[in-house]
Image 1 (cartoon, rainbow, N blue to C red):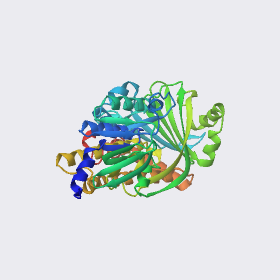
Image 2 (cartoon, one colour):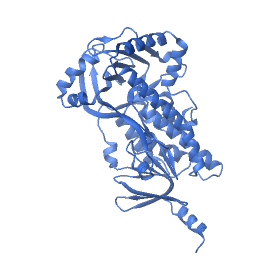
Image 3 (cartoon, rainbow, N blue to C red):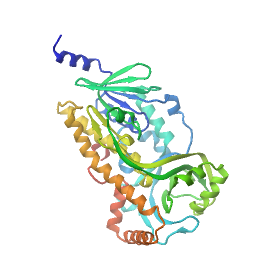
Image 4 (cartoon, rainbow, N blue to C red):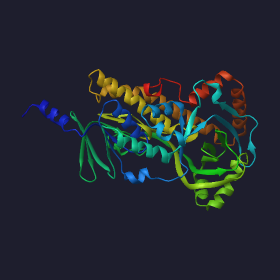
Length: 416
């Protein structure tokens, strides 16, 4: 009875799953599916009812999925469920200017035809992705979904990790994965601090219908207060992510739909003909936040729980899905070698793989935002000339296209 070994064995025998995932947004379910297909049993805990997550209507929210992310979604059986609702991004145009004045003469133009792999990525609405993930998890053996539950406590010992839910239910597993956003309770309970800052900007997100076809072209228009991204959706519809100063964004968010369109039109321009609001409007405060560690004892963080960055390059979800692919590979390889997949040295491999990449991406988006979100005439001249020079260098332009497609760096197996 005094031997600790039998106690550890007992705990392993009474685990609810090999891995517990907190957060049922997008990264959490992607992680669950990837791990389940690799032979792990997984439990996913989310605070929202499943019906609420599954039956969302059109609200204009959408994601720019890089080519590497599409490969992951194909590998875990999600892409076939959303492909009919996806819009290929065939070109990206990046320009600089002021509201109502049109873009500067120098701009960047990226064309998918410059790489061999196909479209740089696809736009997919949030509602289709969430529904596909929920349906796929329900059909996949080895995945248990726990909805309408909040984690109120977590503890770790040599035998595994234990979660206490608000209902009083207790779940046990070998590894805990936090996929619960920038204010991750999983990270906080583990004592993981964060580094970052507020940009003093807010993103206004909506969808607009327009008279003219977009031809699969995504636009990024940099204005002094912040960028306006115009992202193609199926049909004559585009999703906009419009960054403004927090004060101005609050004023615009309080406007009626008609008044909102009056302030949007001069910034949007008339290149797609007349535009009309479609669906709801949302606001999101913008900032940079990176967890000081992506791992702790029997714990790993993915997605926004590990890193949250400016949407300027549309890489937030893509970075999270790369976390998913990397962590799946690290855990699977460890189990194949007979290692404890939650051991500190195993989780350190995941952190080593992902931390430098995400820190570099976060700093790049931070510097780009600071460089373009101002009206300094010298900086304006420098960046316009820089875009013109870059546009005239095919080799460098191709490198940027491959970066946008998520094809650079050490790709995990699920993204190759």
